[in-house]
Amino acid sequence: MAERTEEVMVDVDGRTLKIVNLSKVMYPTTGTTKGEVLNYYARVAPVLLPHLHDRAVTRIRWPHGTGDMQFFEKNLPSGAPSWLRTVTVPSTGSRGGRSDKIVFPVIEGLADLTYFANLASLELHVHQWTVGRNGRPRNPNRMVIDLDPGAPAGLQECCEVALLVRDKLEERGLSAAPVTSGSKGLHMYAALPGRSNADEVRDQAQEIAQELTAEHPRLVLWKMTKSLRGGKVFLDWSQNTAAKTTISPYSLRGRDRPYVAAPRTWEEIEEGAGEGLGQLTHEEVLARVDEHGDIFGDLLGGP
Image 1 (tube, one colour):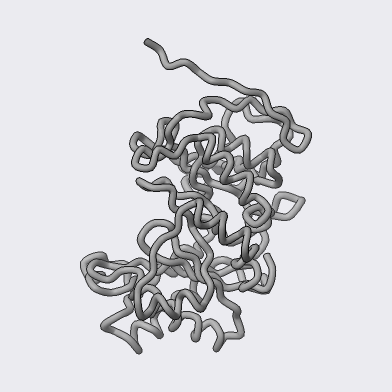
Image 2 (cartoon, rainbow, N blue to C red):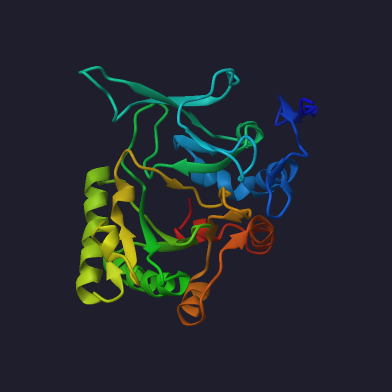
């Protein structure tokens, strides 16, 4: 028997949207439904949307929940509402002299966010550069370094290394904000004035990774060779390459549980370096937002 489709029409910021299958289970381990996913994104929107502002968004979709297949989606899907903002950028996969282009959506408001959440776009990934109203990419206004632990290293070691990365960033006059990735590692962000292009930002991140590897060779690794990662924290500086994206702070992750790329305080990171730290679920993140607001924006000096 075919699955019965639930439909409800809702008004979101003056836009009428058809929402389907609210009771569909998106996270089988916890029984978290699509309705709960939509509720999470609606409630976290005030702190999430400022960090999606003017950024092209790549989505990862799980149409039948995280226990089933997934797919990346960069281009705006067919049938998308005409009121969604888009930006067209060249594709790095152009062939035979032909310049292919990608038409990315830019998520500007709650209606946009609801539309994509309804498509089971659990994960929202963004570049560190933004786009102007003329549709042209600007220089990055953030640097990101992905701290990826190689077993048996874990989040505790990531916290140790995050403190070292913070010192290196401060030496360069940059503020820093830590985000537990919702997967196994931790992301370090720094606000930038936008004077350097993506390649220059990537090289600055690589320089930090190389310096820390030289100073802490038993703990830190800057080379991408996977066979060298055991027991160390790999600092992935390449996430700053113009074509690459990183999970947005406050985005859900498509894991067995509804974990979130969750901004953390430096007090938590300092404590985590001694006792270890855990990933946070969507309910925990909502409680933190209700109590503390936008930790990530505050640490970066504003979104």
